[in-house]
Amino acid sequence: MSTSNWTVVLSGPPRESLADHLARQCGLALLVIPDLYDLPAEHPALAAMQQIAGPICFVSDYLPRAVYWMLAWRGIRGRRADCPQTRTTGRPIHAVCIAGADDHQAAERVLAVTGQSAGPGSIRRVVDSPSKRWYPVIDFDRCTSCLACAEFCLFGVYEASSAAAMRVERPDSCKGGCPACSFTCPAGAIMFPRYAPGGAVAGEDAGTPERLEGDALRHAARQSIGQWAPRPDAPAQRAKLDKTVDELESF
Ligand code: SF4
Ligand code: SF4
Picture 1 (cartoon, rainbow, N blue to C red):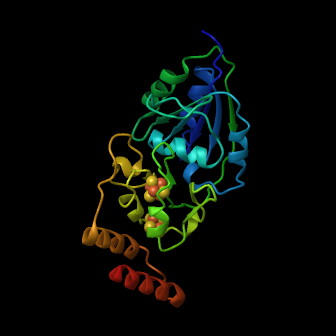
Picture 2 (cartoon, rainbow, N blue to C red):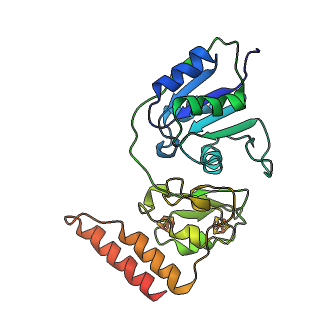
Picture 3 (cartoon, protein in one colour):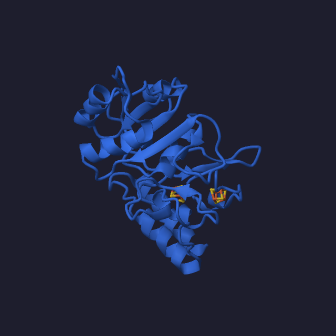
């Protein structure tokens, strides 16, 4: 049994017994952080991950493709090790999804990547409870910089850089529960990691989201934006929502 050079990052709702098992029984070095998707810029968990120079085994309830591009958006880059068909390069980043797995199953999935280590294991925790967020994540293995998402979104979430590379500039302007732009992307590059029906929108590798055209797209967008319910005491929000729905009716 050798010493593992992997750092295991455990993200999401606390799983103390899993963390203890991986560190104490399996000899692995762990970093325990809040839910990656919710981390605001400047959160100390991001700085802690940016300091990891070697391979990362990232463990969460999200699908690996979504995890990889969430990390890349925050400057934590490497080669997507769970996917042979990738253009990414550098040190391995292997995302492991443990949604629905018990501790034993989760540990097996982690050890299949890292192997057992002679240790000594360790746990470093950066824990708090950032607010829940909802915003798009772009897969740059797929994105062709066509700008369709920026033209479609009414809320200025996207912006193209001078090099015409698309970026998510104002993530918190995205309307909770709205995945509409993912259905307009010709490359299937837009993910919403919390999208409950799953599939390519949530980050599955296979396939692309079903493309919606005309009335179907307008209907999906209206449905999605309609879920964003402004408080009755917020007339400015109400007016903005009404204006948005009017614009959707007319495009
Ligand atoms: S619509 Fe899709 S392919 Fe086009 S710029 Fe946006 S993310 Fe990239
Ligand atoms: S989901 Fe809706 S609000 Fe969010 S970025 Fe896409 S089009 Fe804009």
